[in-house]
Length: 126
Image 1 (cartoon, rainbow, N blue to C red):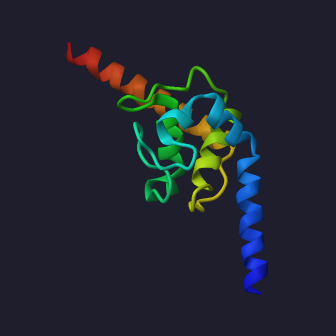
Image 2: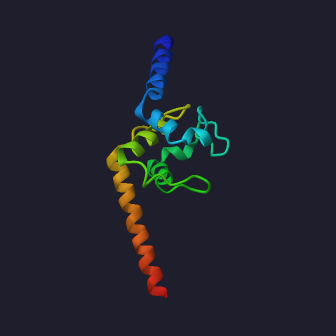
Image 3: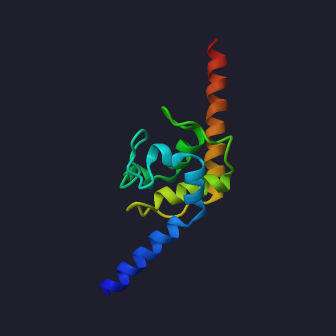
């Protein structure tokens, strides 16, 4: 039974490495700062990061960036962002489940509404 569990875990890890999210992670240069094993460096460590359990947090970080991380909201589609988010949430010891393009669209819309509200409040205060 233990051998079967280990084999399934290896199969799952290999599936993640061959996923569309893994390829986009590499092509979008995420790997440069977060590392090929999610160990971080210039960017934060992703391996074993409990914040990745919050899908909206992960999606928002990809959309708008943070600190030295550039925003990818204008560069990547909802499907591509979902693929990257799912990849990092389920690689390097993380096991936080799927992310759908609909979740990305919902987060994108939520952030847009928040920005519009902030703009209205700012204009009202002037």
